[in-house]
Image (cartoon, rainbow, N blue to C red; front, side):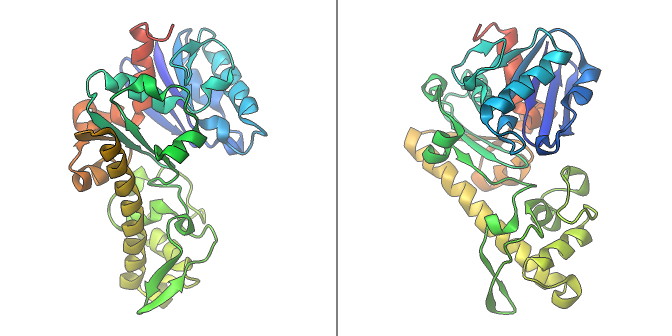
Length: 308
């Protein structure tokens, strides 16, 4: 039995011996079958969120595509839905159920906590007190409830986070272009290393600190030689200040709403946000599996016979 999480940007796989994360942009027709073939077998427990990729005309089409791709490698694959059940074929409840698998599995041991799972693209904020009370939630309803933020550590464009920055003492609007993204911000500030920058860069350039600084300078229609490193680093700090506030305010709102005591943090942003929130970094408890939490969780649920 292996666990699989098919996201829009990444494919995550958990086996008995470890875990793997592959960059797999579905909007480019990513080769799911080729990436899964090294793990080929009969049994797999699967969750997804990649059905929202804009290469599909509808979620229904995306779900059907993902199910067909996975079942071509794992004929006996079962797919976990937002109804808390496993399914053998495409059905609307499979859309964006990966967060629920994490909630149900962690809710067994940490019912008084809130899970913050911050990845490359999105941030899930999940109360663990009553996972069954979360059944049926869609991404639309989670956005409305404050359980989903469309901001992440790598792929969020700078103008999606901040509309203006201070440059040389003056308020300066940022260009609404994909010149730079959150991965550039976090690389410049040392929150991630070049090896963690697993997505494409906006300009196709290197995932280095200098490359990230060049991209960040462009968000105010300048270049690095024009601004200099200190000023450009200041832009990164201003973007980070807004993103950090966005996430922490959302987490605190869920904590208050559910009278929760603790925060657990998973995903690529765990080591960055755990100290800020006074939270437990799940990578200390789980090791690399914390970066593939939904895939690990859905595997455990299947092994334990839940949602049959």
